[in-house]
Image 1: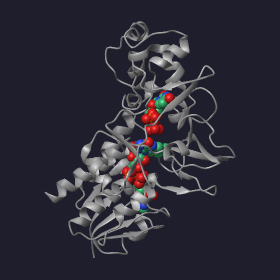
Image 2 (image 1 turned 180 degrees about the vertical axis):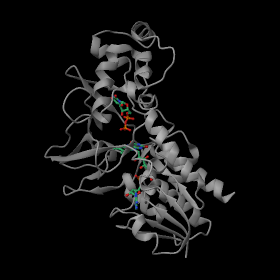
Image 3 (image 1 turned 90 degrees about the vertical axis):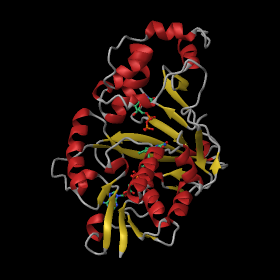
Image 4 (image 1 turned 120 degrees about the horizontal axis):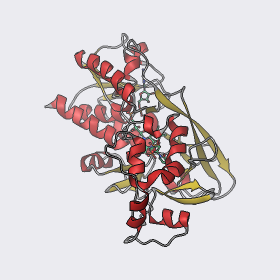
Length: 361
Ligand code: FAD
Ligand code: UDP
């Protein structure tokens, strides 16, 4: 008899399981995939290069509690993520910063004068309602078109004005030369990889894991008191109010016989090619190898659900499922798919920790 049946061995499921297991509860984690870790899973490919199966994952947070929680299960490799964007035939820093502007326009602004530029180009937007408003109110129409419109259309098959403001708000604009993608207090990569970290999280005598198994297959087969579901919330309810849309990705992996393929971890392609970005994993992991593996991401509508789509009508449909979920006893929904929320790893972990606080009160 298990106290909890946890569906999904991603960060939401693993974090909850670990905290509950330490409180003496018996947990069974079930995942339909053939590996642990959910979307953070990494592995060594044929060229013996450590890659992330589901696209580049860089850990960053301002949340001390989350950082300390994960640090129980991994040491860290210091890593500050850098991204360049390929626009007008040039590779320029992304997020847009002082150097981006000087490179694009052959100007020589400094951190004191750059705001003259931004003040000149930015648009007056009375209320920031969507992902286009966020950008044009900071950098104006021209830079919006160069850096955001095409990328967003490729990634979501939507224009930024059709998406909630939280999507492009993830990317700041800077009046200094800081080239880092993230400025969070705590940043790094698990020293021995995410899968190793995941193994450590679930390595507890009260946790059992079953892979290659769906919720449907297991739910009548074992005895348990409560369920934590971290898969798609609409799937749990057999889509009875309609399907929630998700964005999926094709990951195209290429190994090249050269030490490095590009000069930073990620290069974004807002306007050229059908992929949105290319990741070169060796920058993220620090691995040394004569060969290198890159990954191109091509977004698509169908396939594994990776991104909930933050759009008003989808939020409305989600709230119908949420209401239904709240009425269930002993079934809880967590994680990026379970709460239909575009969360980074740290937010997923924090949500799971807070959930545990609430039931352990
Ligand atoms: P998942 O990791 O999706 O885990 C859910 C698990 O449930 C899956 O393993 C799935 O197989 C299983 N499951 C679903 N339904 C069922 C079912 N019916 N039966 C059995 N099992 C089921 N975050 C960052 O902080 N930094 C980054 O750089 C970053 N990069 C990202 C890049 C990409 C391309 C993507 C897609 C996400 C990225 N994220 C990043 C977000 C990060 O992946 C998520 O926040 C986090 O992994 C979500 O954890 P989760 O447990 O909610 O979901
Ligand atoms: N974005 C963009 N151009 C870029 C980078 C990001 O238009 O060069 C927009 C795009 O809509 C993207 C969102 O900002 O989906 C969030 O970017 P982030 O890099 O956080 O995406 P993720 O890593 O979650 O895919």
